[in-house]
Length: 216
Ligand code: DX5
Ligand code: ZN
Image 1 (cartoon, rainbow, N blue to C red):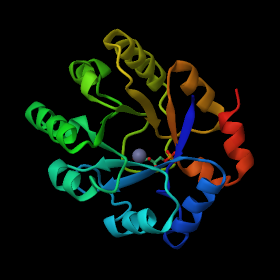
Image 2 (cartoon, rainbow, N blue to C red):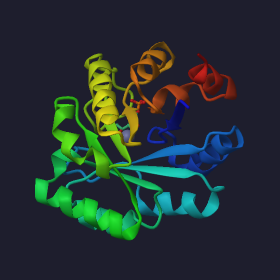
Image 3 (cartoon, rainbow, N blue to C red):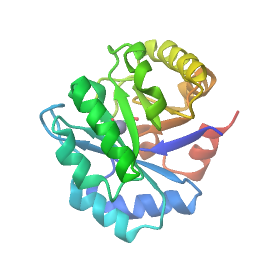
């Protein structure tokens, strides 16, 4: 089933708990949490304390944590007991580090995702697909909400879908960046399972918007 994972990056800090609780009340089960280190991307986002607070105060839901960070193992250790799925960037690590990350996640029972920036070909991730719970196709350069969706992303999703079918894995295809009403249908039709929706939903925050995003 096609789903959305709202990103709360552009929600005012004092409203975070309220926003997430409202989403869950409306039946949204996944929420996307952006973490930035000012090194891998030139920005910062949610802090560990903010995400921890939501984890403690909001009703249970799937916390998908998108870590745009260079020091992957430091952040892996910080978030492994909070997030339901941790997604790190392919470009932030060496092949050896990726192999080590996969091994750690497997032994800890942590669900692992790998994100690809717009210029990274999906073929690069092919050898690892069988070990990954999710692949995130970035449809904007990571770092900021509210950017324009890059149309090259549709072909990347289709190619990823083909590779996943070939490997016969259950890897979730996620897309993140610039998703809104006018393009979400093309994302789902291309093969996306879980679409991150950030600023569009923040600006049009209602159950009706969510229902329309998920309408066929
Ligand atoms: C950007 C983040 C996104 C961001 C999406 O680097 O990874 O999750 O919040 O926001 P929109 O949907 O506004 O592009
Ligand atoms: Zn994100």
